[in-house]
Structures are given as structure tokens and as C-alpha cells.
Image 1 (cartoon, rainbow over the protein chains, first blue to last red):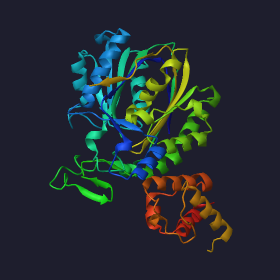
Image 2 (image 1 turned 135 degrees about the horizontal axis):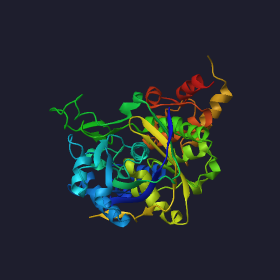
Image 3 (image 1 turned 60 degrees about the horizontal axis):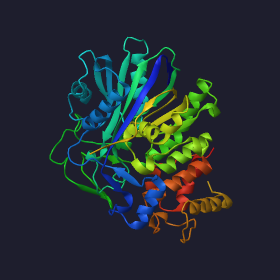
Image 4 (image 1 turned 60 degrees about the vertical axis):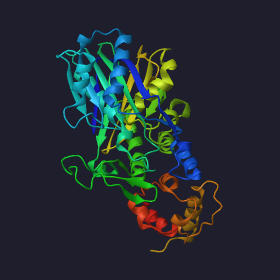
Length: 352
Length: 81
């Protein structure tokens, strides 16, 4: 298990962006009204945000990054790191992060690369970005996370369409020797790789004549091979099995008193699943915020969106200790403990 | 190996409890996937119940292999230490 801590890194700012276009699961007429009610009750997802037209993660993250950089009064030449965590890049190659680097006007001294992760992506992305800043050679960086999952999902697939939203989030990180360490516990298991996947379009299964043929997998599940497969039951099982032990390991290894943690921010995929994890760890409900109802599953952006949407006001009152936990596609999962102190948080941005 | 009747009866009660507000009849031989309330969301409640009450994993392959509540219990029982 990868358990480590990273010193000297402060979370300077957060911004998050969602499309203005809002869809409601009560209107998802691919399933009966009774099924819709149970879906909303089980997942907790009332509404979702979906891009209209050709917007990509690049477009969403550019807008959110510009606003955060301006709010922080950072010089663009000071930003020497840009990591983009996404599974819906603009192109197969090159990396979207590099295109974003140029679009933002960051200098050639800014290193930029993509990380291909989803649900665990924010925690993993933080671990990579923070590790690169920790030595002090890079003073300022941006961690960008997000997906336009809707582009890879068939609206006629009831197992995935009502769950996912599009979004991006920006985390500004800064070298600061006085910052509290960020502590990580990261894991993966490729045995579960088929639980969430898009089968065609990579080198293993190149695009072919059958890729775009829609197939009815079962009643209510229609998709082609370039669209997301989500085995909800297996992901549910995986989460019940692995998330709580991973968090417990983090707490035990670093001797963290559970009661000292102010908030526990979980990846927002399914309310029932998260509540079962919360109860396994015996956490009070008031310390476990949800943004799921309004924003659905925004892939790697769910954790920062929850912080921005739910905790901005609380964070103004002083330093707060948070445990973050991301889990899902891969299978990949991880948790971290960090302190947010004087973090600049912008209100959620709606893109047009 | 035969299953103690009381354990099976308790399992059937627990299984029924995972279907909130149901008016359906639940017995050992109930073909649960044919119940009007059965769908993929309902399956999560059943799996959640198995995890919470019996602390065993019950995955999609297990679910596919089962037709009756008794068959589900047999798998759960075999994994209970």
C-alpha cells in the first residue's frame, strides 16, 4: 500500500465549474416513474449538469482556471506545473494539459501532463502535484480535474445516463514550509478493470465497423462500444469492501484521531453506497457533506465540487482538517488527510 | 449441507426488509427477479443488506446465477465464517 506524506504544500485556492444546462432525473423518461423515484432515492441524484454543444474539459477548465488565477493574483509566469486528470481528453494525443497550458498563457517553463484517472483522480492528482511541489523547486502549480462524461454515455442507458454530470475543478497549490503535511493512502486493483470501461477506441480494440452499432444489452440499457459500461453492482461491492479499510489504514498509520477531522469528503457517486461507508467508519452525518443531489457524479471533480459547494463558508472561519476519499474506475482508490487554511474558494461557476 | 431453517427464515425476512414498502410475498422459493419491484437499484439494497447483516460479498456474477431467495442464501451461507 502506498502510504506517505507530503510536506510544504499549501492548497492556495479552489474553483469549480459546471455547465449551466441542468437536467432533472424526474424527467428521465427512459425508465418508469416508479423506477425514477427509486433511482433518485438510491443514488441521491436529483439533477445533473450536461454540456451543450462542443464544450470539452479544456473549455471548462480554462474558464475556471483563469478566474482562480486572477482571484489569487498569481503571475502566470510563476505557474510551473499543470496536471490535468481526465478520462475525456480533447484528443487521443497530444495531452490536453499541454494545450491548456498554452491557452492559459503559462510559460514554457511550466511542465504539463495528463493523468488518466476518474473517481480516484482528485486524491491521486493531489498526491502527484503536491509531491512535485514539495521540494520547493516548483513554487506554484495547478491541479485540474474533470470530465465531460456525457459525451461518452448513451442517453438510453439507464445504468449510467442518470448518474453522470460534466464539470471541471481547479486546485491551486503553492510551496509553503509552514503548511501542514498532506497524508496519503493509495491503492489499485486491475482485476476490476471491466467494471467501468469504454471498450473500443484504444489500441486493444481499435474503432471498427461494429464500434458505433447500438446494441440493446438488456431492457433499458442501449449503448455502443464507444460508450461507457458501468457495472453498478460490482462497483457498489468494491466500495463497501475497500473504502472503509483504506480510510482506517490512513487513520491508523498516521495516528489520526477520527474526532479531530472536521469533514469527510467522499467521491460523489451513490448516496446509498456512501452512507453505508459512512456508517462502517461510524462518522456523524453532519461531517459528511453531499453535493450529489445537485451535481451528480462529476468523476474526479466530485470532491473539489463538494468542498466548493458545501464547505466554502465553514472554511472561512479558520483551518479545517479534511479527509478526502476517491474510489472507482480502474479499480483505483485512495484517501488523504489535509488541512485547508486560508484557502481562497470561488463560488461555483456556471459555464454558458 | 442443509441450512438451518431458522437462519433461512431470518434471511428471507432480511431480504424482504431490503424492499421498502413492498406488498409482495417473500418465501424461500420466491423468484425475486420476477417481482414487480425488482430492478438494478433494488439489487443494491439486497447487496447492501448482505454486506451489513452477513459481512460477505455478493457480486453481479452471484446475482446472475440465482433465481430464488434460497439460492442467494446458499451462497451467503457458504461465505459466512
